[in-house]
Length: 168
Length: 246
Image (cartoon, rainbow over all chains, first blue to last red):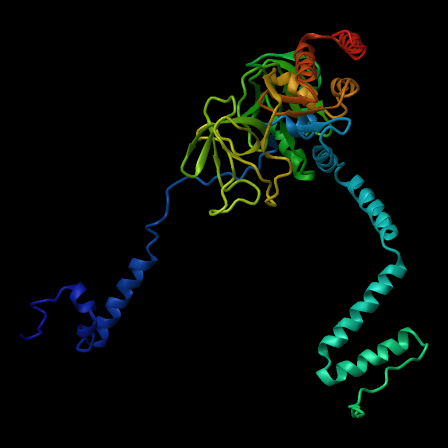
């Protein structure tokens, strides 16, 4: 069919990939522009008046709990249920600034729980056991001997085991 | 902010009725709020309606520093509120949820996974008729309320099934709030009598347990009678009970 302008192919057909090869530059440009306009068209624009961003200064609260500082609902008195009494202390603990004081008190109490000496002992044994873990099998026996030397200096090293020829 | 405070100020401690309106000059408030971002908290009984605050419960207007206002009202019907802890009665088990009666307009749902240590394999042992102490995680006027028996860390903290051998009764919501008030005098007077355990739900249900059935009933009756007594009357009655008159 002679392409003399009397018969025109539809735009959608021209936009297809296999048709692009035969198109001349002018038609190509025209098509591109048209496509751009379609995308640029702000047809998603909502015709609404601009919302006034007004931050509310009033908060609604439906519960009495924050208003009246209501306490935890489970209670036990005079040691009837020790578990609940523990929970009461936990749940009714004073908040915020007073909390820090409580924590500080706890810290001091913790210090008295485990003395420095106990801690040193504990870590001392931990170091030993970790050392043993990374030592090779042959080194292990020698280490054991050394330890004993360090701990009780009374000497008494075990004599090396040798095969004793039985007497007969 | 001062505009709002001043419109409340005259009425603090006074009786207000549904329909009362608190009005203030919005423009001055807006100017104020630009400087310091202080907010007014409207507690139960107060509702914001555009630029004014409406009262929808009858009672006494209360104020707490710095900027909290609410209505202290007497009522018996419970309306679920998110975050409140209540005592519920399990009424049905259906698949993976329990139906729990909390005294509201609708039964609440409680998932079997919302218990401490519960997994799909390890179901909690909950029977129909059991009492649960739980808190609302969803409480919405348009939706079914939902309860959980764990906090946000997954710990029970005393929530869950309870109530073997105790006694459950209903009191007004006002009395429950008086019982739960910090340093409540009523509770202080009660605990002098004898050892006992109590669970108070914000829905007006109270569960008590003491060493014997007799003692449990004494505590329950005392609590019920506290509803309409002055502090002196209460002290006199508690004294008589402590002396063994009942």
